[in-house]
Every structure is written in C-alpha cells, then in structure tokens.
Image (cartoon, rainbow, N blue to C red):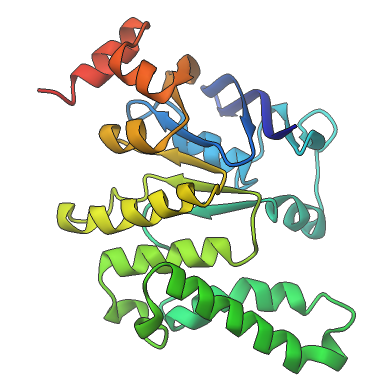
Length: 260
C-alpha cells in the first residue's frame, strides 16, 4: 500500500505555469529526493502538498485514501485544512522558529494548540500538557539538543535552529516529512549536522521527501530521486542509478554542473 500518491498536480500563478502535471508514488519508509535547478517548481510542489498553496488540478492520496482533489476541494474550512496538513510535516529553508519562544516551546506549540480542540482538554489539560512536554523533550534529545531546550532561537546556531525545526515538524507525528532545502541557509560547516539528523531519520524508516542540492547526500540516503525541469518530472528512478547514469539530457547537464 502506498503511503503517498501524487497525481497530475498543476499550479499556476497568473499566466505563469509552475507545475505541469507532477506525479509520483511512495511506500512507507521510503526516502525521495527532488533535484532540479532554481525555478523548476520544487518548492511550489512541496507547498502544494502541504496545502500552503492550493493546486489548480490534481489529487493527493495518503494510505490510498483521497485527501485532496482540486476539482472538488474548491474551498476548505480551517478545520478541514488543518486535518489534511496533519498528515505532513515541513522543514523550511530558513527555520521559521518563533523568536519569542524557547526551543521547547517551539516544539510544544502545535501539539498544545491541537490538544485544546480535544473535548477532554478542560478536564485533563494538565496531563495532556505534561505528555506534550515529555514528547517534545524526547524529540529534542533525538536531534541532539537536550541541553538547549530552554534556549531562544537567537541563542542557537543556524544548525541548532534547523534541528529544532526538525523536532517541531516531528511533534505531530506526520506520516510524511518534507524538507525544503534544509541546508541552504547554513554555513558549509553546519550542513553536516543537519544531514546526519536526516540520515538518522531515514535509518528509522521515516518517510521523507527532500528537496536538496546535496547531490552526494541524496545519492546515499535516498531510495528514489526525482529530477524536475521547468515544472515537469524529467526523470525519475533509483537514486544511485539516476545519479551515476542519468538518461535525460537535462539531468546529465544539471549533475555535470556540480562537478565543475
């Protein structure tokens, strides 16, 4: 059974056609890396899949159940939108942490907001909040930041902030975790610590979609690589095979540019 199926996703901004029928399928525990030049539509695709943008056409299935169809989901209530988004976690390029909250508070925020919608919250809020904090502490330990839980973002390095972002994305136990260029805002010496965290998640069978320019990392950590060019999937295949023996001319040119 597929955990995520994406069918014919289209997205326009005015007359600009950004996505032109993107489709792919993933199994649970699979790691898919998306490569492509700037402007190829990679970030727009992630934003559509996380419902930060609404696709103009296409369908999205989770566990073989249809959760989005552009034809019928013309308008979604805030509750409907939130319900769909809970399937996914997204780690942004630029961390997007709340500066007024500590690392612990950043990780706890979304679960606490969700808990308040639970009918049992009024009578069991103390136990629920305690459980949320315990889970957040475990997540911060998982990304190697137990000793930084009471630090504010301004007191953390870029790599540490991104690790908090990863813990925050995991806090609602998403079925699929998306990364949008997770190392692009980091100095080269900090990139390794984020890639190590992602690698450890892959080893624990976290289903992930990673938009990245880290070619060697994508080759080593991914099951599948999808190469996007001008809003379409130009090539898709097993990671090592695609990197070492690309069949599409645009894929070859893109990969060759990293060897110069």
